[in-house]
Length: 511
Image (cartoon, rainbow, N blue to C red; front, side, top):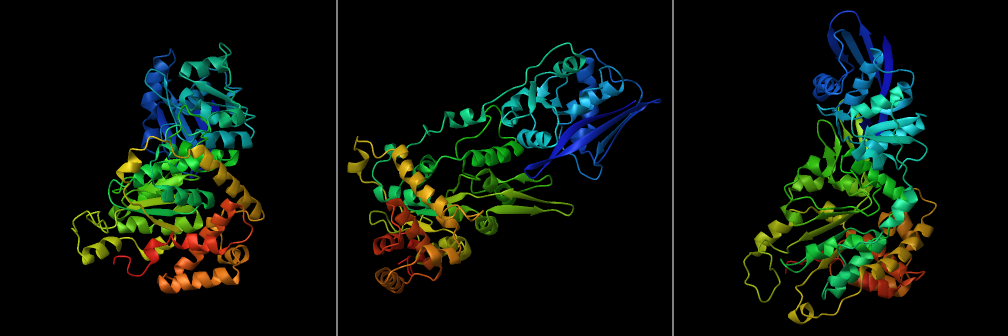
């Protein structure tokens, strides 16, 4: 008897339906075809034990299983449940009329229990698109899949629950989630708050500007000055994610297997990879490509602590994703693209010893060593960072002050208002949403300067020996400062503040 059941394969952030054809005939043997990997080939042992321990048998007959399309490589153990139900239906142990109307996915334990799978949200979206009646999957993944409205999503803990459902012996209630209610439930950021930060008013202002315009940012300062502490609080002042952004972000984390019981992600991700991370870990890839840190930081913040300690070739692979806001991974037989629109926040010491320009610390690095240290970061990468700011240690008087500073919630209100201005400005552009994404043409259009501002910028570039690449960056940042003030045009005061945020462009910054 031939039976068709349906599973799904995830490539990039999208799913493709896989038809699992099970044919049972006279003879003896178990044949699995259709480009399965080792995890799928081993499934027969898990399936046999799981069925035996729940009162069913793997028949002693010739079982042929084809996973179509046969030229598409299938990977992982998530097809165990699909194949098990297909075998039971093909051998008449369960009724086969309904099994073809559902997507069935899950890894089996030897006792018939279910292990979580990856990419449940992408699979659910595809199942709804193709008109399937429902989706069976492990209970741990049910919240992320139930985000998709109009599809019956059944979370199961044991293979017996699925068998009983098709036999009509038991009922499983589909999981229903009110996506909007879930999304708006916890939009605050209780863990880190700018109210706890003592002093550092200029840095807070700088981070507010970076958040308002989506600008990449680098913090330069000695150890203990508060660079990491400030960076961790940046997500708390970013505008809340839209429902569309939340779905995009959840989809990527689902593919990476990082969404379990949380359902829809409603807070912007903050990723902080260690400096020994490889290119594949940062950008994504591997023999079976997975999203890297820059994609997991999509719609959020990627924080690179101690930037010069990262391998230069690892940092260089970020240049194209920073520009294009997506990363394409190519293999001989396929190409996949992951979104990677994130804010880059980096921190670094000004010298190998960490205390360059600190009058109270001994000079432990020569100018040549400092130059070599800074040269680990290439010019093209720095070119993609709009704001450079020096972080100085906080004096004792401010550290011991018991008064709270301005809270993240208050700062976020101003940031959100500035972002709304930018959204209205760029509403006719599909891929531009905030000032950091402006092209040269849009900079000329939206950052037109009067004579006074133009003269100020010219003087600053000549006196401070600012590089040519700093010109566009200063204009973008000044446009954001103007938006925070609600000003229609960029003025001289906005230009003068933006000029302060280009420390690494100054000739002779090393003294």
